Image (cartoon, rainbow, N blue to C red; front, side, top):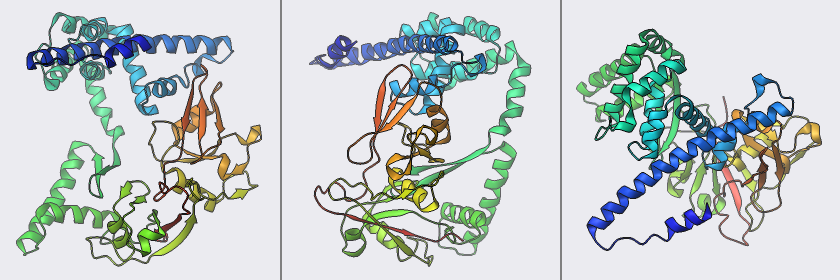
Length: 426
């Protein structure tokens, strides 16, 4: 495998445009073929792990636990993405041979193969195989087709094969409604709501009518700004939306008091500019809201940037220590997982003698905490700056995670004091 990687790295680029285009096309075919091999390897890993778990006496209903997390670690993806990759591989290898063959030959890339799998997910294995045979992607059915054309063809074939299942999937889609938040550039965020069409249209119409009314009355804000502000105010009940809500902002004392340019970190968002962070301590930027601000001082060790430890003999992490862990880890500590922290976990479990200390703590999402507790998984704190944790999977592969660097810690040898302005909870 290393020889193949070395061969790709040593590939010399062509000196003319025609040659470069040919190389781009060939490399795309190679990526697709690699995706096909990865799918087969993924299914083989799943089968091997299930067999090992069966030999260890694990009940059949519990076999396969932790496999998706191992796939994610090996592919440097989040656990949620690892679960989807495992499902994709199983569908391709066991139920969709034509789609897999098209992937092998470069007629489909991994994303478009994923679309075919996704659009046939509601079908039985036999019906999915029949749709795969009908579409026969390996015969060039989708040559020149875009994503929408592939989705439309798969949906039509699925409906012809089993209209009841397709209809039931649509009727159950409302159960998937949710609201999500992800960072956007320039200290903005994307707040997304997945809603049934009637409710989504109603919300948008109400905001639109409100914006039109204020706009016609001479409001200087744009229509989009009025809609966004109304959404925040109607949801939170307060202009700016932050009254009574705690905001965890971590910055150095130099940034807060001396006008330093070292960026700050806003928990749940990420890095924010120093000037924006300073303005937050005097009021919400760009909103005019007046906030009650208080500071909690956190101190880091000289040079390493490690937060000073706090100990407890309690079984559960006390509230202040949980806040400390949240400030240090920011997101789930499993490698490549950036999900929000839901559990404040003992790295070495309490029942194995693990202590309730900062050094033996980790912020984890719910899924990763459950995976860590499955048989064969081991987690251990390791010495070093920024609280390293080593995760070892049942196959013996190890992966290391460190806490994200706090503002100012790149200045080696300098003691940095962290300050976290926050609005107290109501």
